[in-house]
Figure 1 (cartoon, rainbow, N blue to C red):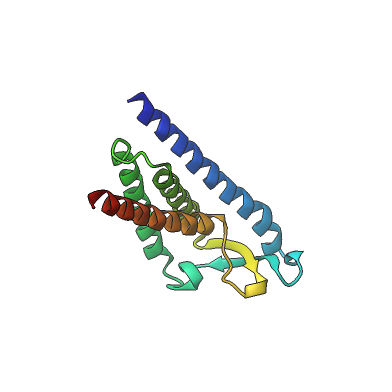
Figure 2: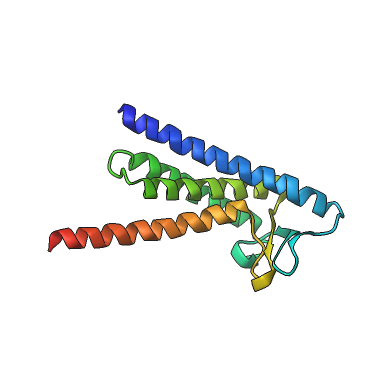
Length: 164
């Protein structure tokens, strides 16, 4: 039992740390730019920080559906938390636990923005590939989903190999 509580505490620490990182970067970077200062160019033609108010989901889809997206996000985060708690004894794989923690942190970071501002504060722009503007929470969600896919594939192929 102590092992599971220790694991949950580590996951909670990771989640809280990532939410704090997301909110701090949004305040530190987004605030001055949104108040009229020019974009912050880190590497000319490659990476810059810009202030974008995203009222939609990824890549701006479902723009102006903030209330619906907030409800869907809350339901998704609560579901992820339930899965993480209920699988403590069944799944000990750190890849799964890290992935779920990233997804939960990213979801909460963007929910906070939607509730507080009515939009998500995006600011990282990869100018070199003209990629959609994103934030730390978006990165957590994306990396977490990729890790879940890797975990599922790993588990599937290792289970299939054992059955042969």
